[in-house]
Length: 416
Image 1 (cartoon, rainbow, N blue to C red):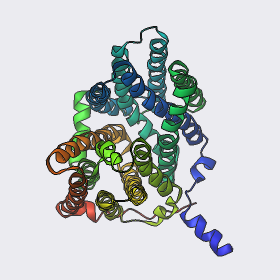
Image 2 (image 1 turned 90 degrees about the vertical axis):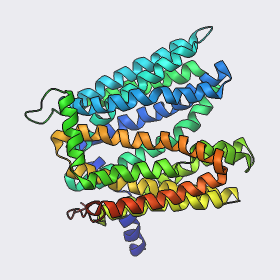
Image 3 (image 1 turned 180 degrees about the vertical axis):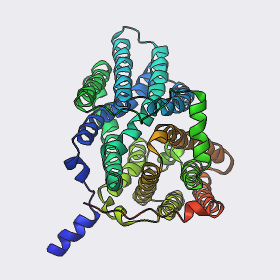
Image 4 (image 1 turned 30 degrees about the vertical axis):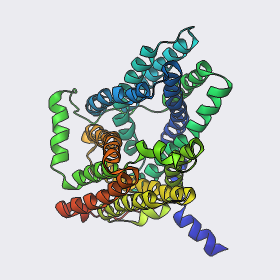
């Protein structure tokens, strides 16, 4: 029994940062609640758009409308994160999110809700996300010790994965039972809760000598990223994996072969289930020092699992491989996060977090476009399988082209 207990402790997620650091605990709790609310709205917005228009094209246009403000504001948000109190930036953007959700409540209460309001709120929320994410990501290394970054990253990923699994399911139930106005209202309440948690935290001032945000400051971050082949490797591998191996746009067509709408929900949920399993068993990652190699192998594992998913003729086999893909993607993400947080100087961390957000936001969107085009040329199965294979090849080429990234080795860490 003692041996079993020790083995479990070795792989179980390390919750030590939550016990040891009050401000990290407050941030974790507040963001867990508000992210759950955001995932509820993530379901409610497209549902209302389709309810009002009956058009899948309009629903898709919501995502397209969000792309430009997210990318632009991520770079601006990175510069702001390096020049201002990061906690205050998160507070201000949470307040903006609450206002946008309140506008959705007011619109849903109208006799004739307006579609343009949905687009306006989507654009505002995307811009706020771009402004907030660099400060939010840059907060964590200021709240925990350096050797605790792998555990803190796993806990943050766990928080988000729980929201991604539970939020859409809860959102669907709420829409069906209490209606859209109260569903949006719940999201407003989650932002207010997060604001209360942030208020209890201590201030996190910018590094000494921080300059005001400017285009020059943004370009300093870009030049720094270009000077670090190991960082470039993390960005390129993520974009390659998501561009070639992201088949979610094909899930509706794939679901038809597995029984329809019921299968579609399972297909969307399976990668998040794999991510959840990977995070709760992430204790072993603290012992890994060859982070570049781990990122490449995990990203290649994502591609290989997508190939197997594309070849599966049985729904449950397909779901297993999607879960494996989600777990591999999460492992890659954990090691990317540790590399970013442990090697980027604090005075540049916000701007680099903005660049990171651009990289992991661009890949999935362009990947959905790529898979749709490929499916029109070589069929759905061909698009999925070829995309997975190209992901593996792309990761291998990146590793060969950037040997500094492949050989990257972290300093020893002590798990306490």
